[in-house]
Image (spheres, rainbow, N blue to C red):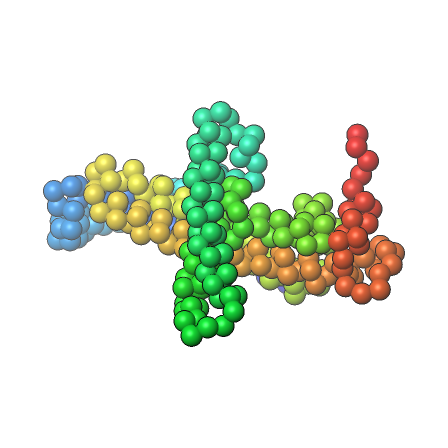
Length: 306
């Protein structure tokens, strides 16, 4: 038991150091360096080196008590900034996925609705171009067979906007919504109702894969939070704007990749393991899952209206 607790303590300490302290310490270092250099001498390394040397040779820092106090202040400050980034990341994630944007306050709701309508117009145009290219490909064979690259390019353009017709103001939100939409359309399965029960029946390796993808999404939105936190540093050090922009672009890329993986795993796990859930609940079937079986499963999992 003691060995288990020691190992758990080591893992928690590693996560605390990796997720909170190190990013927070880097942020503090950039903030202090930027404040010291200012706008006029943004890349004056000699000035920064001189300032660090002067501070390191001060009598207060040379004492053991001063070093302990400095280390404690840095750790506490870095952890506090890290917690701020994680809290802000949760808010950014909520806004990025926008699962209930229709219930947002009036101004954000109107902005989200405007973005949804704009993305729908773009998606409809891209879908029409894809359908036109598909009709040409399905036409009777002739000497002038259309280039398949045109149809593939039209499909990529449409998927870049959204996998299904947009219902949320962001690509990431629509990607997760698309998984639920397809399951409802194909098998009459409501993912929001089905998932808690299905999750309890999934094998451990499958749950680990899904949890890993979900954690990657959280890390991507936390990275976006760091981009927001670096932006105010441009007040006294303009290169912070470059850092903020690079971190924001990296966050956007990682969030899209993680969300796509997470949505794929949600849909795949539901399609693969719903038959086993039907069997465990005593719903008879003679083959694969059908819309009729989906209706029966939803009726069994749904409570009566209060």
